[in-house]
Image (tube, rainbow, N blue to C red; front, top):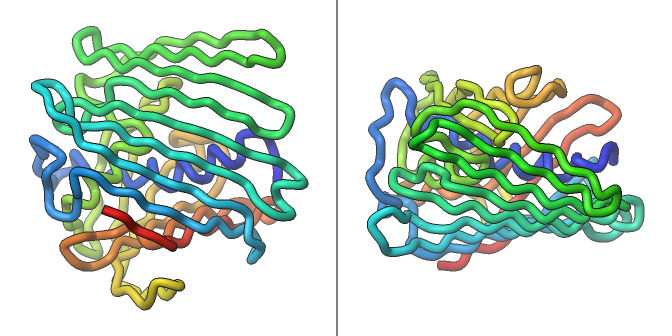
Amino acid sequence: MGGSRLWLLTIVLAVAAVSTVVFGQDAARPQTASQPGISSHESLEYDIEWRLIPAGTAKLTWAAMTGANSSGELRLHIESAGLVSRLFRVSDDYTASLGLNLCTQNTFLSAHEGNRTRETRVVFDAQTHKASYIEKDLVKSSTVIKDIEIPSCVHDVLGGLLVLRSLKLEPGKTAQIPISDGKKFVQAKVESQQREEVKNELGTFKTVRYEIFLFDNVLFKRSGHLHVWLTDDDWRLPVQLQVRLNLTIGTITFRLRKQEK
């Protein structure tokens, strides 16, 4: 499967990259998470496929919160399965706390990937315009610390999914948005490409396909393509996400299998 960050790279990119429409040229800044297509509580479960082989599952959960400075909390759990799990076992948990306008306040990752165990925490400070990144390798007992400058409102790799679902970027249009993983800040581009039908075990969906440009030395050095399919309706469900990397790794696809509200 590749390096120890492959699983986190693929699922987080796939979900993260959808944040790209939020502060584009034609996008209005939302005030809360109570937008069309976004429930106060929601759970989305995906089957992960690698080179046509069942590779694992991913579960993304959103819970809105009350309070003057809170929007809610996102949680992501990734678990490898089958042959892939025997080759390279993965069990990752990621949490993101979002404030007003769905701006990220902090994130935490607990990653168990192969023989590596890491904990990564990022704090996004809107007042100082700083992101503080701390990664601890619990096996090697080493720590990486980094601070970068950011805008007053920036999105982590998950929060933008909610914002994207509250907007409608028609095919042929593009947008630019600020996004950060705590180690790097970029203005990422998203392109609404075309309407397509997507079939999975839940049925056939009319969707809009987006390409998000985070590879090729934008946020990530690796060459690749990231596509996201959202249903072409008020719910705008992310029914499919796909990362196409080089021939050594190939294509990884996330297919929605269950939704709970």
